[in-house]
Length: 71
Image (cartoon, rainbow, N blue to C red; front, side, top):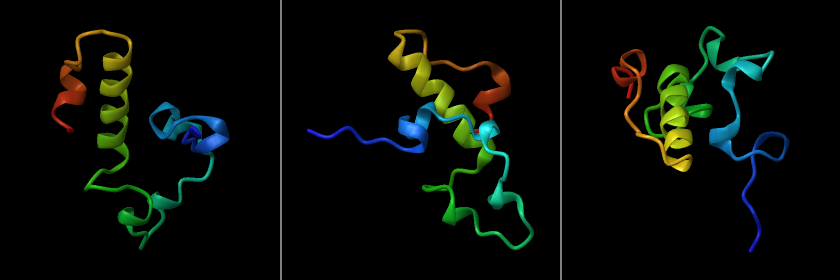
């Protein structure tokens, strides 16, 4: 079975949005749904990725309060 990869061979939840120099979703008139699915935006995506990392590491999936309000 082939591995699903995203940016530079990494799974989508492993890619930090901050690593992108160009963030076209921030440009005026940009449609967030072209870049994020299921109602996510840049902040909620970061929180979701952090929660997934914690689950994969066997840690408590509860996020710090700064992230919890965004999911």
